[in-house]
Image (tube, rainbow, N blue to C red; front, top):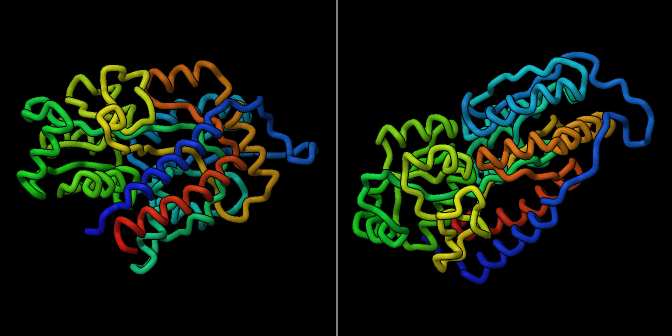
Length: 336
């Protein structure tokens, strides 16, 4: 296993944090007009919101919160459909083959949509390429934390590292899918702390948490919302955010503990390739309008999410930046 060059990893973390700081600010109100100010007759019928993760997971929770507001904004019905598997890749492969008319859009996750095409390039592909997905918006962030069973006898991050070194491969850690943010956290954690863990992928957060709370796996790389909503049923050792997470003030960051380990997931929605600009802009403006609602922001905070406000242009720039970052990181970690 190759070693991360610490200077390289620090630069990656710094770049990620700077990009996020630039994109966390709120945007102005949005309508559904075209980019040139002309009236756009879109949408005129039902919209299909494709959720690429299990019912009850992060993406599903947010989509269900958004649907009533989207129906109000666009004046049409919005239906949720599920396209689960492959760490999201089943749904994204289907998305890029849908008609580029704006009537089907899907949940997207960064870094997943970047990592999968890179890692699977020599094995038949992921079914899609990152550049094929036209982002509408990135509206939510979730730092990743490490948690163990309450009766594990592990009380601190140092305890966990010591136990992992004493039993190489013996500690099972769950995450949602392969080549996901959790999978990347697993690779980075092993490399940084010189330990060997066993990663167990699930089709989403809901089955991951069920397996963990049922005692079928030893630990999880969990999203911040999972840690907030179910933290009383587990012991959270650390969270990989830049600063103390407001909803978990008693949980130390890895940085607090002296480790330059920062990673999270950005979540949003995307369209098939070739969708006309005016339609992309209409949907992006609609989602931006949704995100200006204080009740939506408050609900996100209460559930352990971080609201983001990246419209389609900012989201595209962010994905392009992070493609460079994560390509370098994967090459270092996996010798790709």
